[in-house]
Length: 108
Image (cartoon, rainbow, N blue to C red; front, side):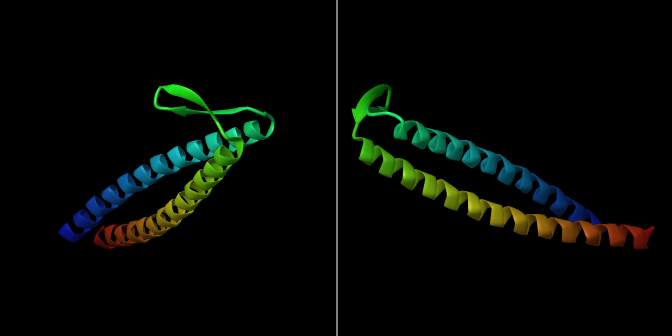
């Protein structure tokens, strides 16, 4: 029975980890949407600006486009990596949950 309790505790920790993955994933998705929105806006304007600290300064359009494209690529890669980790964690959680349910049914 202590084995079941340990597995239940482990399952609880895994579900907390899944929540953390979800939170991180939402943060990356939000940042990615911001970058994509900025890229769309830049294509429709002649002058571009970026914020450095608390100051907005004029910036070279091509340089800013390159920086945003790199940021978009980095965020996309991080998001894909996080999604793979999340999927692996979900699979492990489901397997452990199945084990716990079987053991609980067996022990009555």
